[in-house]
Image 1 (cartoon, rainbow, N blue to C red):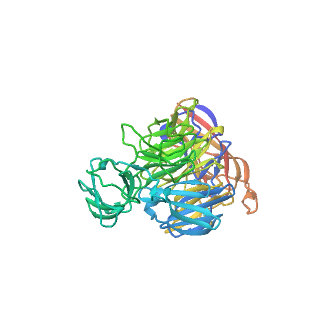
Image 2 (tube, helix red, strand yellow; image 1 turned 120 degrees about the vertical axis):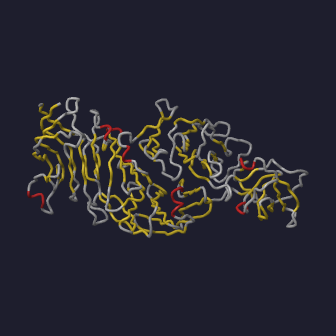
Image 3 (tube, one colour; image 1 turned 60 degrees about the vertical axis):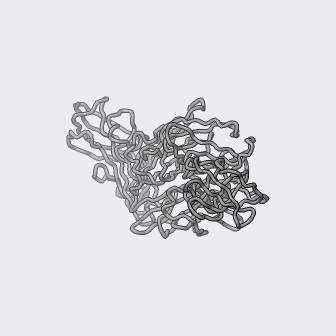
Length: 571
């Protein structure tokens, strides 16, 4: 039987799945709960949660940073937008979205303006002005002289064989009756727009599935035959509204709509509500459709070094600089796919775009290769896929180097990532209740929690040792199975387990409380820092179970720098 002394002083890989338990090159753990991996590779108890406000219902959190010194937090509840500043509610705005709509609501911000899009709702604009906040409808650029608006127009597939017969209408010279060769119209077409006879028309009245009344601001000549060369507004109550949104190279970008899921529309440069393609001048609007062998639903668009387009089946990028109608260099780089049923906002992590894959079991890191020509979609949770269980929300705190992912279970998977120090460590956060949403505003990480039947807005705090002022929580870390000399031991006899700790008043190793100096238990005394040991006797043939488990529940900023095992093994 061989004697061994094994010290683990880096936990940089965090919690890993059992399929990697036979690897010798992983500085990981079999379990990591309510603890973080710190810069030096050690472990520390997570921060507690400070109470911010009570909420009337569950909410989705969205950051709204106007400037480096002016940050707000938006909490979207059923029919309301609650605006918080430094933890205080300063405005309650009525919104058109119910709770069910929040899952697919996307947004893009530029200075004090945030634009919201949803495939079933007309876009809305939230503005911060000197007088406060306002929520209004997004307005496409309008030409008052002829009543036209600069919304994109196109021919939809289901209208390819529809012909319109135009006849005079008794309502006036600028009115006409549109009659189609087969059933096409519905009540949703009212106030929708068409282009035909070289003019833009507004539908004013629904008569039947084949007949509507329309108005145009100017004279027109009745055609001698039915018209097949006509187009509809891309965005309307009938055709749906933009699914995703971003700003890129001073253009407003809409990605996909309910009835044209693979379309990308880019506004004129500096005129974000004008989508008139004009004659194709460099600053005029751009329209493209993603073409591939698979049906593509654009899930989101991201402005990075390039314009990244994440679809349900792959990742595209437009690399043109500057981006003009005559220079659109677009291609598909990877084939991972993103979640389309809900918006899980991609996060900027160390210069990369991090997104949740279509399977909801991967979190991918979209990065350019060394030549800056091709993207790769590396799996950030390759070692810890079991932690990805139906993600509902995601946010990244760059100051803390932490990526937070709220799960449907109410737990939160947390990635401590610092590539410069070789740390990419997943763990799990739990609380007495459920995590429902997460957002980062400035340096602060906010969460919505459900405790009992009530909902609360809380934030992680360096000074909070418990959650919401009264809910304690336990923390734990468990070792990977022991590997000795590159082999799996047949039997192991552990003689002693030691840990180097900082600021600790109570710590358990393998279920037994570690003996510490009596003086540290006084309320005003500092915690113990140094080496602690636990004598452990007995021979084990179950070599897959963790050889050690550290845990505790004291409200102290416990830190574990290393763990050492002394014992014997046989192969």
